[in-house]
Length: 170
Image 1: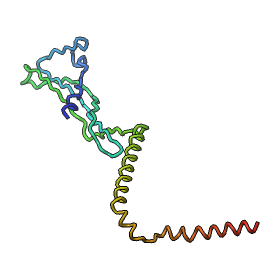
Image 2: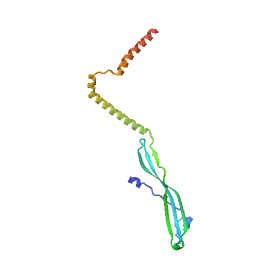
Image 3: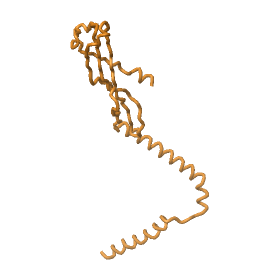
Image 4: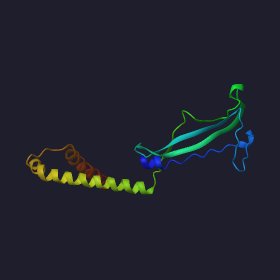
């Protein structure tokens, strides 16, 4: 998290001070007594979230954008005529949508996932072989006819008889 905060870029705000009697070229504004200067800026900061196929979200960075800037000068009340006032009003836009980046399922992800499936199938085969070694001897002692064996025993001879009848008919 510290790295993410350290990577947060500084926001540079620049105002056109020539609108209030300053020099924009040299970036100098001489404050005149009896006036109030207000520098306003609106900043938009949006988090960028990275999401993968498993919907694990991770904060990736920030998108920072200055959406509005203005500078104004107004006369102060008579009792403050010997003072100059300078204010900065920086506001942040609220309720912005979160920007999300989704992972693209490419060839490398497919190869990685196929490797994972092959590994899991290999583990399954090993578990089944161990199961068969341990409990297979017990099952061989008690022979239970299965439904598949019954179907094959009844179906194959009838198919052979039909084939012989078709050959005899020719």
